Amino acid sequence: MLAGLLLGVGLMGCSPTKPEEPAPQEAWQEDVRSLKEATVTLYPGHCAGVIVADGRHALTAAHCIKGAPGARQSVVMRDGKVLGGEVKVVDPQRDLAVLRFDTLAPVHPLPVASSLPMPGEALLFAGRNDRAIPPQDVELRRLGRCPSLPDVPRALFTSLRGEPGDSGAPVVDRHLRVVGLVHGGAACSIAAPTAEFSPLVDMLVAEVARPDTPRGVGGAGHSEPN
Image (cartoon, rainbow, N blue to C red; front, side):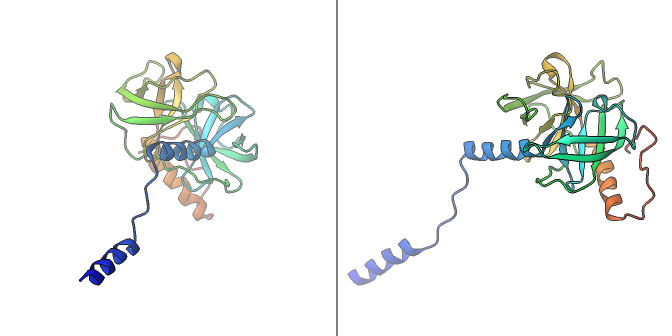
C-alpha cells in the first residue's frame, strides 16, 4: 500500500502542468512593444501613423497629408528604417488617410477594429516613437461630435495626454485593434474613429492581392467608405 501511495505521488509530480500565462504587467509591456513597432512617423512631416492589415498599408490623419491620392509619402519606423509609399485615400471629413508601401513592412501589422469601442473601455496609447513619452492606459470617456469633425457623429473623447505632432498616432483596444487616430482637441485627446475605414482597408488589401484590379480605388481625392 505504501508503495502504491509513493507511486501515485510520483505520477502526480510528473504530470504535465499548464504553461503559466504572462503576468498582467508583462502582457501590457508586450502590447506596448507591438504598438510602438507598428507606429511610424511621417517623413517629411511631424505626424504619426500605424501599419495595419497586410503590412503594406498604414493609416494616418488626413490633415497630415499634403498631397492628393497618388502622391509619394515616406515613413520612418521605430528602428529608423524608411519606407516609401503612395497616398491611396485622403478623407478630410473623417480626418483619415491610407498609405500603401512599396514593400512589405518588416513588423507585425495591427488589425483595424470593425466596430466602435464603448465608453468606459480601456485603451492604449504610446504616441510617436521619436519622443520619450511613457505609454498611457487610456479611458474612452464618451462618443460625441467634435467641432473640427462635424461629419463624424461619434468621435472618440479620451483621457489620453498627447502633444502637438501626435496627430495620426494610433489608439488601440486591449486586443491591439486600431480604434482611432489622434485628431486633436485639448491635450490632443480626441481621436478620429477608424471603424468605418475597416472595409476600405480590406478592399485595398484585396487590390494588392489582385494586381489586375483597376487603380485608383477611392483615388479621386476623397473616399466615402460604405
